[in-house]
Length: 74
Image 1 (cartoon, rainbow, N blue to C red):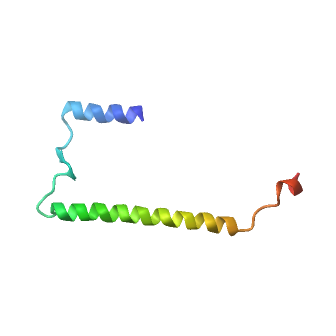
Image 2: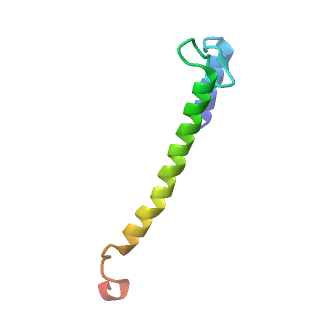
Image 3: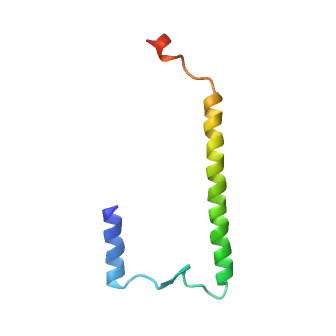
């Protein structure tokens, strides 16, 4: 983590980084600010939906046949 922070600071201090706005990179003529906000919210919704399905995977794993119990295996 410290290496990543150091590399980011070196790019920032050297002035080689691209100018950005509060929405990330500058909004060009092909993409309006409202479109970019909508895409960001849509991405967050997709992540939240994926996290919901992760709980289903744990339930499925619990119902699968498990190996013999420790007392029988020993």
